[in-house]
Amino acid sequence: MSEYKLDIIGKVNLSDYSKIYDYIGIVDVNDKFTITLNNDSVETSELIYNMLEKNDFSIYSKGGDENGKISITASRNKR
Image 1 (cartoon, rainbow, N blue to C red):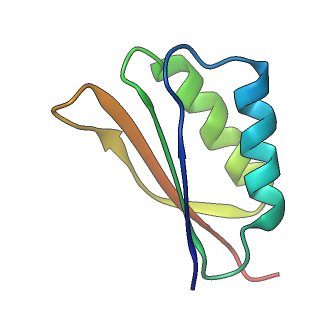
Image 2: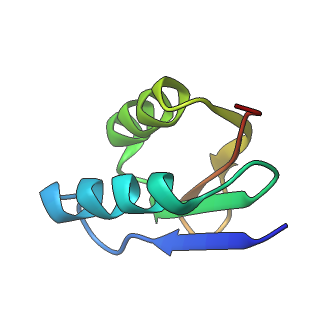
């Protein structure tokens, strides 16, 4: 089991979405993928949830922390 982390600093832009899709392509079954972004990106987090779910990922942790960050942790479902 591998763990992949993507920290998005600042406002989410098109290149960040491209990075997410790059990670989606390499994360395998039972791997853990965590995306961290600024807390002011709540609307963006919904879009990221949809991206992951449409690519056969299960989101098992999502929420904010005391540092003003949103964290999304997911893993790929069995193919």
